[in-house]
Length: 455
Image 1: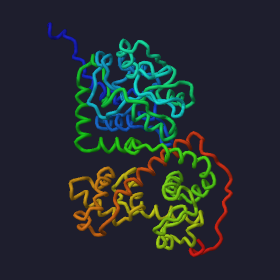
Image 2 (image 1 turned 180 degrees about the horizontal axis):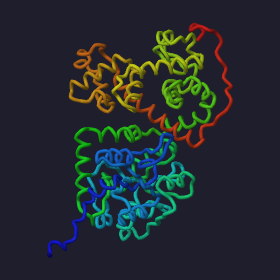
Image 3 (image 1 turned 90 degrees about the vertical axis):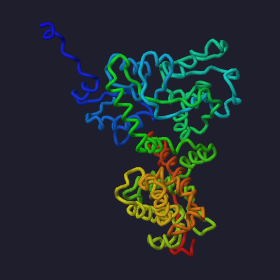
Image 4 (image 1 turned 180 degrees about the vertical axis):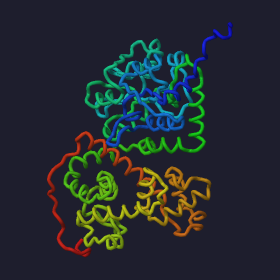
């Protein structure tokens, strides 16, 4: 009789999620975690969470907040199952929550606006207030060191996220803030005057957070999931797709590009839009900037010319009679790039498909295939850009290129080429979505002459 009156056992957290059919994931709105673009939900945390939900066989519901404190309240009250928001382990957080395996490593840096003041080298040299996001790990860190720096001027605010504070640094509204390296790298594509003063925390692990007052069934699945991602190489690929191209920052190059977007691109924007065909015109514009800096009369020592820097054989194959004619060059370059895209095996998915086509545009399809074969021979995945780009520079070495069909190639060049175009393209998309690319009627002078000899 006593056994008959025993309460029914409660389902585990994992069973409850599967019965519900929905995984609820809390996140922060921002470029390094979760955001909405023209195609819908996006961001590294969304991609990771979506793959995890698919793995569990349930739907995904992203619950977004701007405020870290509000986000953690969702987890404490069990309104979400876990947090995927670029969060790192701090002592106050570790006392209240359970952390999954780390999947990303960042540095945390003090940031100021270049030219506004002398660069400080330590907290003791800060000559104005330091502002951080309330409830963030930066806030926890400042609280932990407050006794050691009694004269440090700082405050925490819940009115801005990190991106907002970086904007205030640019605008001169605040002097300093603290930002994670991946957030800073993304923002510097648009605001190159953001400058690093010094690093305050190295090798900070980013992980998902779970409620520690429930059973460990979901936690065990999170551990298994990230283990599988690491073992398959998919985690490295996903991180590279989102952050791999932004860690290399060049102040002069970025500044020149931003200036060119304002002063030069408006002259040719309509041509890029008109001749893009199936391509994103902003990708075509990014390729052109990498090739010629949008200079229609550009000429290289090797004989390539024009906005898209076409070789003479390529120009003739694409029907271009004058490579210095902007419209002809852009149209010819677009069609040639589309041809490269069509040659990439159909099984290769976006965005790797685009990176492979860009490399082929730069170095030639034959050399790209040589690098893919080398990748396969060395145990890498020939269908992943992150693996192939490691082997492309080997085409410079005799012991490798003598085994290939097409021989020697400057394989390090397409690696830089693709990385640069990825950065330019991301910047153009960001500026365009915010209406910050000027649109003016075309006032383009077409060079006289119809043949290549008139160049």
